[in-house]
Length: 437
Image 1 (cartoon, rainbow, N blue to C red):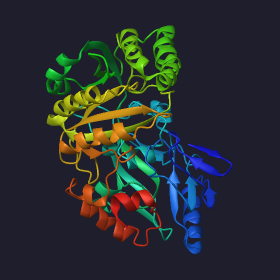
Image 2 (image 1 turned 135 degrees about the vertical axis):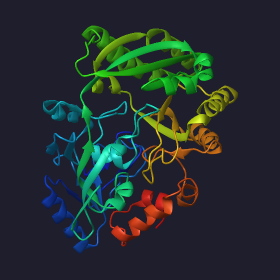
Image 3 (image 1 turned 90 degrees about the vertical axis):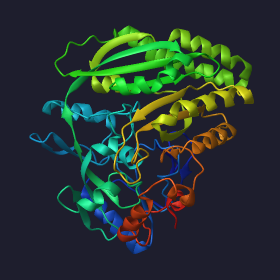
Image 4 (image 1 turned 180 degrees about the vertical axis):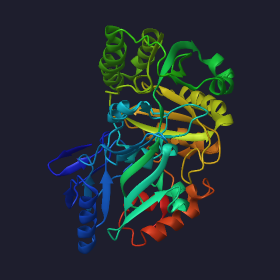
């Protein structure tokens, strides 16, 4: 998220707004005052964290609540391994906050720049067929309603609202605190290998089920999948970290520095893209190491891009990927960014992309200076034909009518929205599109 001359824009630089007012609350009381003041002036309110959504879900034409100062640990329940965090706390800060208590988050995505409230509100997830998205770790929230009141939702208080507010799209109130169910700190043994793509697709279901955390990347124009298999080990297991120079070479020099240049050149001279993709496959993706869970789950992404990701019934993932692969070949597109495939367990959150079904995710990307429209729209049609649901924080074209058909509890969520925000103080154009006016 950046603010330049009073203009807010997201990380991908495809959503921007000049809010009428910006507030930077550092406490729940300050959030309440900001909401009440906005209500008196008839202004809508949106909270923003890192601005890492590719959709305009956080665009705030009225009052923008910048939660960068609403951070840190509120309380830790050692007996139940639970931590209550302020809503603006960034994911990358949480491991250090939990370390004194010997705790960790159960699962993470591959980017950790987001705020905890932003990540959970948009359905951010990691990978692992037995593990849910980050929002499934929420066991309680505190939010500010349009009237400035405090609403607490836990397993014991207003529990019927938890499946809605744990992944609420920012439509139900301003989250100020979240309680997450943690696990004892653990390490991950990572094995990253280039493998023949056809072999990976033929055994995709088995790989996902047999591994704690499995994913793969595919650079179009190659026949290789870069697989990553992570196995969970106790926190006191021996660690065999990547040497500092090797990690810097792989994650910074190659994955960010050189790759930024490759994307820029490929934009100007598209025919060079396949050769660069084949080179990328030969230079990356062959290593083995063991380290703290958050250091294995996440990576630094320095090359700016736009992204669309769809959630599919897990059993449809390989077929949908095959059609995507064929599409790129038939259209003759030169795609410099890899396609990413991940998995998640079914959950009971009403608007979770994995709600009610084991899920496979397929994500496509384009360099931020390239127009993704034709590519994304064609891929979207494939994903929809396989029962796909779009990630709430990533680009898609669906509206409320189309989304209602894809979520069994969609109308229940809208009913909660009608109850908690009848005047739509927390709405914006994106929410009007996906939830209705």
